[in-house]
Image (cartoon, rainbow, N blue to C red; front, side):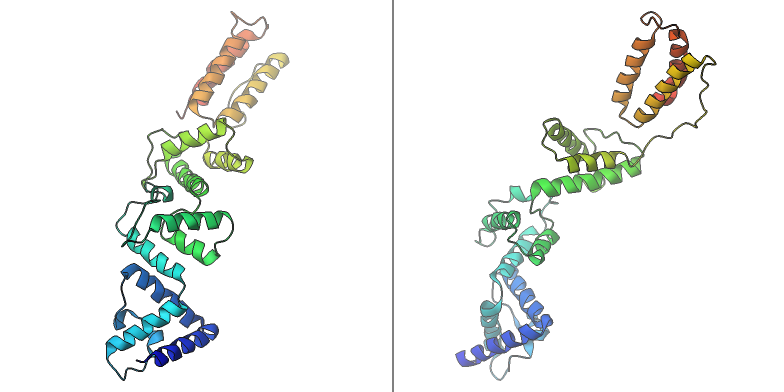
Length: 292
C-alpha cells in the first residue's frame, strides 16, 4: 500500500466520517483499542466498518499499516489515552477504595497515565471536558471530581442502607454490600457539617436520606392525657415535641428525654402538675426510646 494510497484512505475516511456517525464511532473505537494494546493492530482487531476502505491487493501487513496510518491521522489522541486507562484499570480495586487521587503516579506501558488523568480532572472542573469524554471516564469507575462524586456515592449508599436495615443509625464500622465504608463516610460527612464545609443543598440531601425510614408512630389517641385542662396542655405539648424527635438517633433521644425528666421531676419542678407530667413521661418512655 503506497503512501498515496494511504492518503486516499485517510481522505475517504474523513469524508465518510463527516456523513456517517458509525464510521466516526469505529475510528474512535479503533483508537481506544490501539491505546490499550499499545501496538499496531492486526486486521482482525480493526472494525469491519473500516475494512472496505482498504483494497487488499498486497500483503495484509501493508493493509494493517494503512489502517494504522489512518487512525493516527483521524483518531483523537484522547481515545488512545482512554484505551490505556481501560487497560490499566483491569483487575484493579473498586474505585471506592482506589479513587482517582490515588493514581496520580500511574504509568501504563511507559505512558504517564496519572498526569493525564489529573489533566482531565482539571479540564472537567473548568468545564473544558465534553460530555462524551466525561461519561467515558466515569464508565471506567474512576471519579472526575472526588469530593463531589464521593458525596453522591455516599448518599446513594446511605439511602439503600436506611431502607434495607430499617434504621437511620449507622455504625462507624458499617460497610455496605457493595464494599462501601458507609460508617466512615458518615463520620467524615458529619465532621464536614460541623465545620461548615457542606452546602445547604448537601445538608438537605443528607437529612432527606436519613429520613427515608422513620420508626412507627403511635396512633393519635394512644396515650391518655390528664383530665385537668392545664395538666393536659403540658402533656400534649410534650407529646407533640416527642413526636417530632421520635426518628432522631437514639443518643439524641436519650439526651432529650433525660432533660425532660430533670425539668419536670417533682423534686426539682415547682409546677403543681409536675407529678402528673412525670407519670406521663414514664408512660411514653418505652415508645420514645424504642428502636435503638
